[in-house]
Image (cartoon, rainbow, N blue to C red; front, side, top):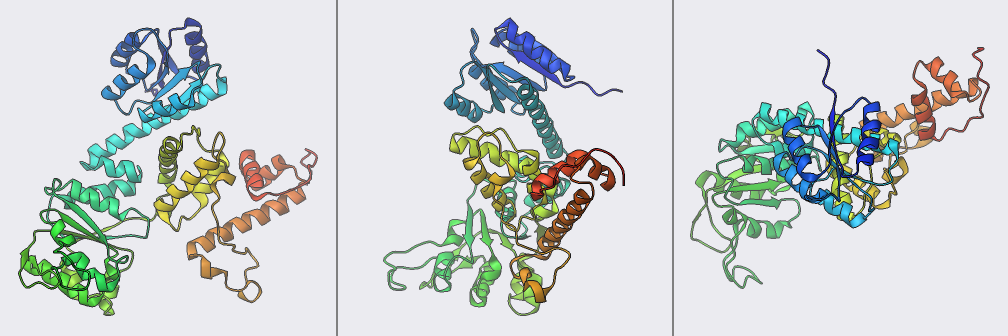
Length: 473
């Protein structure tokens, strides 16, 4: 059975505009339905179920913004592109806050109409896939939406749902910036304790001499500056969950006291002798191997065994690169709203750069890079806007005697990745030198398509004189 054509609703009170947009989209193979006002648009949405909507802002009766709100109330995943003759940046940002996918200003470019509509349809399909994943893994759509639609995140969401309904203590393992706190919040949000507090504490950010007071609280007069009784994080989390981030950094003495609270379900404030009962679910996170630390004495074995009732491993971003385009688009949308900009998307070279980079700082680094790129970009994000700093790693001629120790500032995977790029550049240089700069002939010799050669030549900044187009070898 042939796949159904993507269906686009064009809603505009000007007949000429409806005809123009219909012709443009039908030539691209889309099925087009039309509406001349807001009321008719809502009827078509309910009866014909379009995959995307091009919606005029100014129409009689229900205007575009009102229709947008009604559409989102019915189907928040249906992508809507607003079309207007009034190029108003502020209105565009307001529309995006209300859930619009993008914005077109009349007079529009035909290619831009096709490009934005195609992206909107892709976004809508992705949203439906996310919903399908949510149904399959029974919950935590928010976690999948925040972390990406890959199978690895789907399985992670399934583990979160599985353990959330229990009262198990959980260890979340993963690199810095990979999303461990997101996972912890998802566990709490899907649990029977969801209405109770979720309290987070970074065990690596609190000085050792203040850690116990921060965790257990203190009595008035227990130390200099303790001018009143203060409850600690444990008491604040009573009835809910305590998330202890980077627990591997906690001193052994404090670990012993945490173990005692877990076992006895009561604590003593610093300077106090009256037990305070607590009912807490413990969720801890680490970027280290706690079992190995327990084996070599850097972490208490008894505490490890009490905490490790269930372990979740959060994959690094480089291990699930299929999530990068989705996350990049999501962070771009957020940055557009924050910065009051309308950056349309990413160039092919920018996407290739995002996909080839190893992301040592994981999702946190990706968000920071996209946010900065949105600030400096003009119309769309280019490779130069990304400003991703790579470790300088030599290629085939790698030698510590010649180049020193470049691995000190790079991971093994980053060294390998950069070495591969160095080889690619060297090969392209040699082949283009052989073909006299003829990229089409170089593509045939390398058995890749012309676009690949063109993109990589631009990416590596290779300068070659143009050659003739014959195929003599």
